[in-house]
Image (cartoon, rainbow, N blue to C red; front, side, top):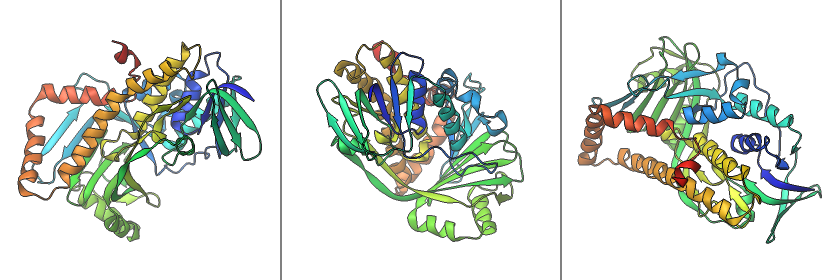
Length: 394
């Protein structure tokens, strides 16, 4: 089977790339091990905070319109608290001249909307369930063999198959990074008080706790915390966990009630040595994994897909070396900036040195008094997930 582009991995990044390229004349294939789960009435444990740039991209490819409005919540304000009890940094969409800072949506509904879109496209071949087993790179093509014996040839292979990417390993692309020795505990709660579309984040001695608003009196939380503390939280009864989370959030939303079983995932920082090699390109978690304290992991992946799609639309050869190098250069600045921010915040708020503690809390209050600086930070954050292709050309 011959294609122009083969995308290995039909998650959010891979499916959005396929949807973006489906309007072109390119022949596309998506290899995925299993179809997305059918969304249930219960709220997902995995909730994404999507920037306006990511939402604009999803609207452009028709995926955002496929999500029921009653399952989406706008974030209009964000309140960040330091660990001193007196330091704080507030962001407001209104004060920054924005309609919203972000919006929350469930992973399964977003994935299902993307999948339904590419299922309808004539120039997209979905190979699912399918498992790749062999990758061979030639000068003018890439060949991928599947476990069932089928073989695919393409001008470009895109690895969007997650943090444990088969494509990245098969191409022998080095991975750099480290484990944080933490788990991200996620859960959804009903809250006694209205959240008023405000997101909260507390930098605590036992990790970073974030509240993300959901429709109605509901919130989704992510508590990034050392493994021992995470396992302690997971072992609590629903009532005890709700009390612990409410207390850690300074009772900002009153009493909480757990809506579903909590879950946890390991935290680390991972960056591929290169995002392109020969006729191979990496996007999403296959190329980079960042700490969730910045809440930008999914937005980075969508930004990768957006940028690569724009470059491939006008390319005579999707696997051309110069096209792929332009993609890597266009993404380098945003990835480096977010990597530095997340790593810097992690180190800053995990230091127990008294002077460092004073400086970090003083810094939050100092920034909070500067309307100009806060506006710049807010506008920079909401742009994550957009294509940086045009910025790279200018």
